Length: 122
Image 1 (cartoon, rainbow, N blue to C red):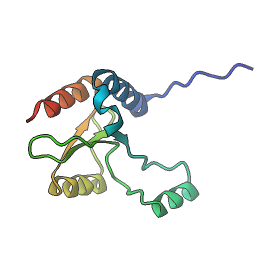
Image 2 (tube, rainbow, N blue to C red; image 1 turned 90 degrees about the horizontal axis):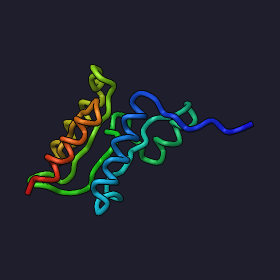
Image 3 (spheres, one colour; image 1 turned 135 degrees about the vertical axis):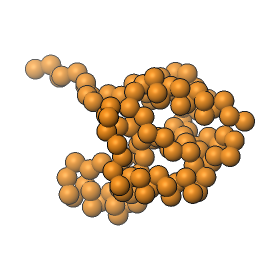
Image 4 (cartoon, rainbow, N blue to C red; image 1 turned 120 degrees about the horizontal axis):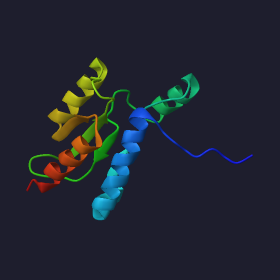
């Protein structure tokens, strides 16, 4: 039986499209855009991830490229109209206090503009 094609939907699809675009547009920074896996398939995996240092609420991607007054850019993906949860907002505030820019995006065009404006900072 042929294997089904991988076809992520929703937030995962947006995430994949944005990373693909970024790597094509900014190959020099491709390895500095890092996915932070803080989603667990089950309780055992969740416990193991926490033991390894995973933090619930941490943004989905971090671009480890300093620009202007920022140490890097943390990006949270959400479905259109969805807002970050309170524990995510708390982590975003802690990252901001440490000198990171933090943004929430819900579309590829929003991601593209964010990246272009961030990398244009001097």
